[in-house]
Length: 507
Ligand SMILES: [Zn+2]
Image (cartoon, rainbow, N blue to C red; front, side, top):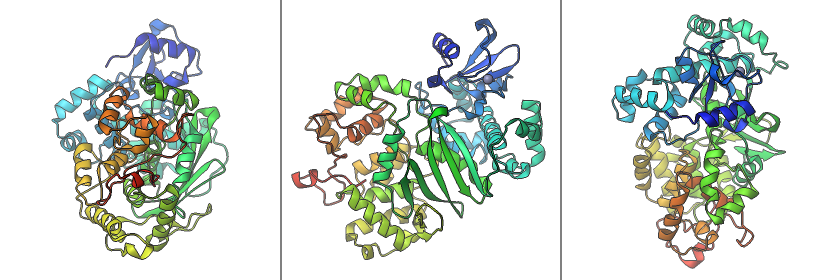
């Protein structure tokens, strides 16, 4: 793992928030590790060591600083050319820790040997998979201690320690304090209602929150999602329980505020990780921007709206259904149909904020008569086919370790073409280089006539083609007609004729 030590040093001395979470600083005297923004007086250069990850600092015997709280920093960006095996392993650890079979199980799922995986982790992250998983668990526990009033027994389960004894021992070992002592230090403001949790989720600035909200608002499924007064609300369903989230901007702290309402605290870790992915909070703007600026068609857009992110999704299945509904109709039309789908097949959910349902589950849609809400037979068959494939376990949106294989299987379903598959890769798998190269909006935005030419042009945007796509879709250059992304559509009958080409894409 190579860190640019000069850049680290500059970022540390200027407490630059753009580098927050991209490296950690171990202080030799105190044996504490810090974020680049730590408010504590800066140590002399000869007394610090730099680490690529918190896990590497922990593995080298440093403790997390109680002032800058490394557990609150934005996550490790998918960057620096870490091999895909490592970034996929990190994604799996984020989703379920090492709960299913430890490092051996993880390596198995990735199709590599466990010794090889360990070597890759040490080379690129500075710590073995077990240390990475342990640090994540500990960080999340610390976040729950500081930011919630959950009883310690529930907190131990929610952060994956299994029992209070192990949890207490781990916290004491690392922090030299009991969980209760740490909670006293955190000065929590007010008591939160039962089953409600408030999390501050950090990002590396800049972050274009307005752009994110605009994109989500235009596509908000009535009853399930709602954007109002700078907040994004939605209902969620996980492991058999329903709840809701409310996300807004906390610009002064370079963070989003997520208010989570959910009955089962054991799901909090997954909920927080999903929200981080959905709002693209691990993105590293400093790494992304230069590739985009190098293209003259993008430079103006990037400067006009810095910090644009690729909106992810709460559920890959929901996004895929939404993408199919939107083939060849307007965004508005697709939103209306999605609302009908939810009213007809979703489970009622009572809450404030105009939320009335949770999104239908695959099981419900696999057998549903979807023509009853006005879908064409072909579109109805595509959605039923997708739902059936998920129910049968042929397609799973969770723990995707081989995106190419996943997309291939998705593309085999009738009615799902390359465009839809790439769109799903972009928003459901968080692939920063996913690229719907047949997109007419992209072609027009750049004044290009063939997708082959577009693909050639886009080589320079790698590995950030999804970000370039977002700019071309949502930030119109003066000369470009201010339309949404356009597409040829993907259904079996689509042929990319001039008429279809003029239709805005409803996804
Ligand atoms: Zn610190």
